[in-house]
Image (cartoon, rainbow, N blue to C red):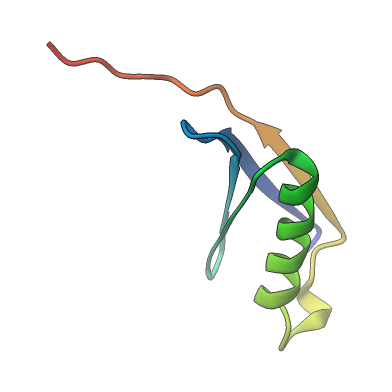
Length: 73
């Protein structure tokens, strides 16, 4: 795998959540700040690919997404 793309969104109560869809599942993790989130992403990738290290991505891209709120009346 060449690259994993994580969508980063701020949480309403603080912190961030990162989500990445993969061919076989997904990786989702969270952190209280950006530095912790980066560490958690690395840990989640290591855990996801622990039994197939040759498939680990060569790079990780973090994409910050704007949170859009929906209001229903």
